[in-house]
Length: 320
Image (cartoon, rainbow, N blue to C red; front, side, top):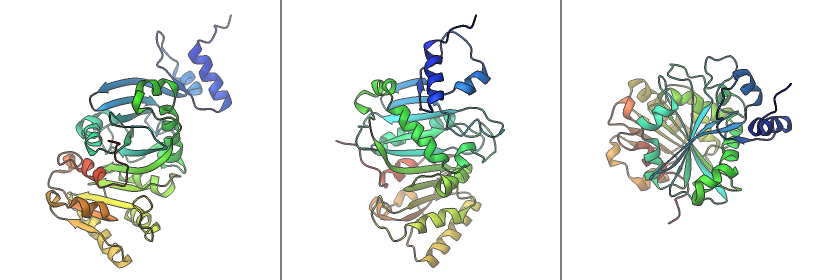
């Protein structure tokens, strides 16, 4: 006798057959077969954490970086943080953060104080932190290195957030029927390569990029991205790049990019003491370089650099 499918499996099988996205609540009461889960896998809500800062969701995503292409990583986790002050509107402003080498998404969320900084910035934006290579010195990010990888990934994130299950959890912060808004990419250290991949082949417009001691290479990708909208001046129309530097090799790359931008006729701000950064000037800047006063590991959070980047950004402020 063939055992009947439970409700969860039936919904998943129907979704796979139709090609439609699906959100599944965590499995209870029995172990899953890895092969069977891969065949039937949909978007999965795995955990919900709520505190004064907002709501953090742990999702398993079909279009996340991994598993993919025989690479030695199989963690499909993505964390999504919706700050307590967030209110749904016509569009969803989004910040995607890529962690560096020898760490993971969960550790990065805590160590780099990402949630607290997004909350403190007062932006009406969500934070998305995908799991890259786990605790490895590896800059390969699976599906997010592919053509249209970013757009597929963010489409699945938005679909999950607009599901009935998550909408009920978010309550006043619920995101229903919203289209993509402004998009910022943040990267620390070894996350620079996937950030560049998202700019060059990700399939959607990225408005702003924040590199935290991360410009180790592929400089032309970032330069070309800035130049692509050099003639646009609206905050949400241009491409804006902010780069913090501390490591000597990153400082050298930043100096070379400044030289190239000067030849291109693109103005930039260069702040030698981050404590003296002028918020108005940094908000207006198309490109900004900031010499960090702290070590490489602490660049993202010790001086609230991510919070500052968001405060200077084109992302919408939270409603009063």
